[in-house]
Structure formats: structure tokens, C-alpha cells
Amino acid sequence: MDHNKSIRLSKFLSKHLRHSPQAIGLVLQEGGWVGVAELLAACEKHGVAISHEQLVELVAGSDKQRFAFDAAGTRIRAQQGHSVTVDLQLVPTTPPAVLYHGTAPAALPAIRRKGLQKMKRHHVHLSPDIETAQRVGARRGKPVILTVAALRLHEAGGIFYQSGNGVWLVEQVPPEFLQEL
Image (tube, rainbow, N blue to C red; front, side, top):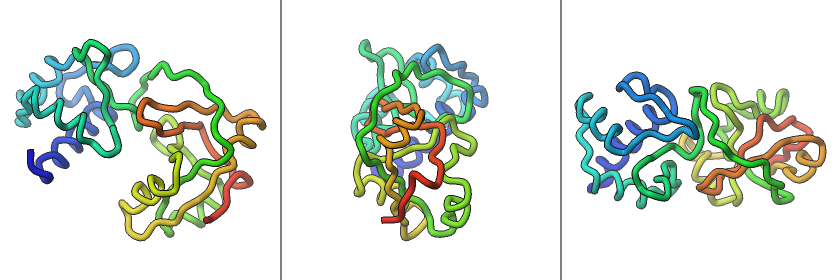
């Protein structure tokens, strides 16, 4: 599958597995799962035909591993980033001492005042390394990288989760736990 088609399909799946499943007639099951056959039929019905092989290629080839199949390969879900109500059944986990967050320079004044907020999502997304944070932050131009004193926040009561693709999730990060790199 060519790169442009892969991006287009990934964005379509992200929209409907994270934000508006009902728009194409999907209902997320417990854990955010949806049947693969059901997803493919819904996509085709809404003008975006995806073969099973293309879906497998898209999931396997995604650099950010946004999606995951269940162990049987019969269900799929977005790993994180939902704005719809869903319990991904993640278990609280002790984070490493430091995590990272890539953002746009324009967001810094608000972050300095309020810290990192989840906005319309369920959690703030944090990266395990600087390179990933740079990639995430570069979506809106030259990124600013923030270090997050994750273990210190955890010890102060912050509850952390790690999604299946290595992204760390937390409700919020107050400004006193942030530092610009």
C-alpha cells in the first residue's frame, strides 16, 4: 500500500475508533474493541474500502502502533487517544523517573500556567524517549520538548498507565512537574 493511502486510512480509522465510531455505525465493545469484520463492513458502507490484508499491513506498519488486534486477530482497537467514553482496561503502573512530551511553542504559555491537560481526550500522552516526543510534537512545526518528573508525580498521587504501544498516560501533569528541555 502506498504511503499516502496508508496515512489516509490511518486517519480514517483513528477518527472512527477513537472519536466517532457511531458515525459509521460502530459500537465499541468493552476495552474499546470492535470486530474486524464489522469494522471492514462499516468502512466499505461509508465509502472507504479496506481489505483485511490492508488492515493487517496498516496495523503492523504503523510507526506509532496506534491500533492493535486482540490475541485471536478478530477484534481491533485504538491503543489510546479516545475522546469517546471507553475503558481500555489498563492497569496502573509505576512510571520511569522521567518521561517526555512534545508540543508546539504556541502551547507553552498555557502549559506553564496550567500544566499538561488532557483536553478532549481521556489522558495526557507522554513519550518514553526524546525522539518519540520530537516526532509527536513536530506535527505542528518545530517542537518544544518537555521533561516530566513522572516518578515524582506518581509519588505525589498521579496514576500512570502504559498503553500497548508504549505511550504513557496520566490524567494531568501540573506545571511543577515539567521542565523545558
